[in-house]
Image (tube, rainbow, N blue to C red; front, side):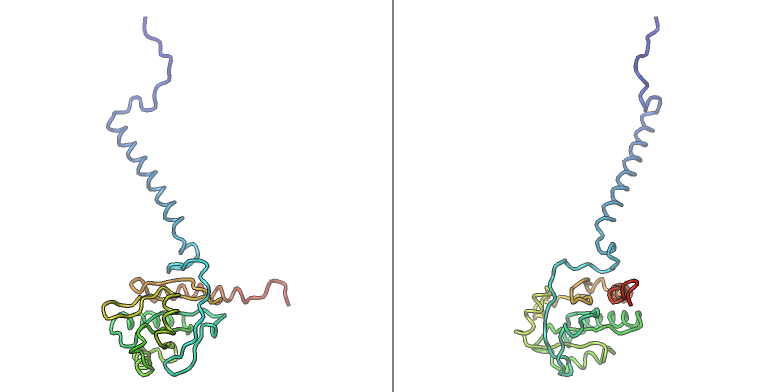
Length: 223
């Protein structure tokens, strides 16, 4: 008597082992690819906020300072409350990183078609004199567009610490990055100089300008 089949045929019945293995491998790769998309999409906090630079940690309080610029005029961050600010750290006798940073910032300002308050804080107080600072700003064609802020080591150290900056030293280079401060005076975006581009910086400045405009816009129906 022929045997009676009491169970259902398995899904892989009739498929050669080699083909079955290939199909399993393809399915696994598709699953891994889908997971990778989810992970990277969820982990890009910067892009979800519309910025191309890296977001600064939340909860950093506004940093107050009062320093004189290359023309001897007093400068404070509070002066620019209500406006986005480009903040960077430089030394006036620098021959490579600082001029590059200055030109990237200049390119971004040219790109957006308007000047944004730009402050460069000294990281070499012994050599950053008013004369050297004026010369640097002039050589970078940023006169009237960038203020180079100077001070003693005692005045500058709390600011370096607040922004996580290592000053220039004999055996090491200073921290090189650009910080964008929003209209509230809060650090929002950080750009390491090696990743800084005029286009990316201009994009993030436009985002901050749009935020400022939205905040100032009157509520619907108000007179």
